[in-house]
Length: 391
Image 1 (cartoon, rainbow, N blue to C red):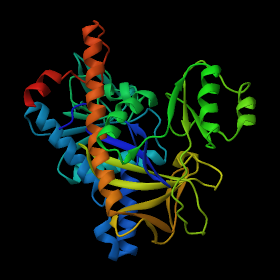
Image 2: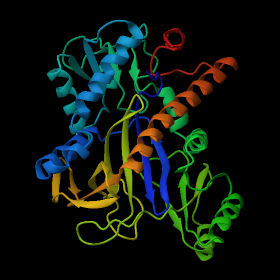
Image 3: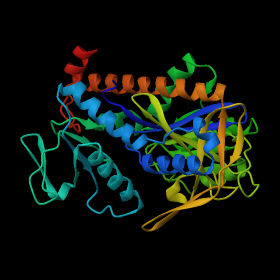
């Protein structure tokens, strides 16, 4: 069992020349939409059922929580807490509601936990969300800065963000995986802290006939991304970038040419969810237009199913639909993507090893801070001594 990073989501690109790792996340939504996608395909294309993943990902996640709690405490999970922002009634809130209902269907008590309706009493998190005092056995962290400093186990502990919160630290951790799996690629990547460094790194990439992706090192959700196509773009950027924080300069990867329902080729990525290192679900996120590279749903991207273990990499018709939520309509493209067996196995192996390497990198960072006498507040009690004994 992974202690710091039991629940992972990864973004991969299927490039024209192979599989690329792009990014890792520690507090990632999308489980519910992945399950909805899988069930949509199962209804429309029952012949593809054997290629589907994610049909039970919500239950699988709750099962992970139960096993994680038992592993750390030796006790059965009874009450599950799900942290939510103080104002969370958006389309993302639907997933939190579904998580709660799934846990209850599986026989667990489940409660929402908001900062303003809870308290930490002697390092124990107590929720007053539903009119009474509830002490959860484990907390599913779906907020970035809450809870902090509690004794209950948390999935994922905030320490995971030491690595996943930095694109550069993630890149360095995954570099070790590419040594073990040469078929897995990473785009050429540089961390830059000044425009001179950015210019040098970008020029090197442009001179080889490639475009450049520039993004803030510590941002998420597709925010702040800029494409540099030539030296003139680079010159214009000088007066339009703020170097109060570091940036990532990365070679742009051209995605595999999949034609979607309208016959057009869009940039897309693959969001993969791993539970304790094993793939439990996946989805395609494609951009809203041919000239955009940002695929995030919050930025107008569309969803499509990702299937595994086909004979070839190809598009498969599954029927267009829409998922309607408060303040958001998510469009599901009428075409899904199926990966061949070789790429599917590579994706599975990569997800397992990346989970392990990020776990290792987080552990090393935590131990280094302890050695320096730095004791940062974490989301939960430090179980690392117990984990060492269990392993």
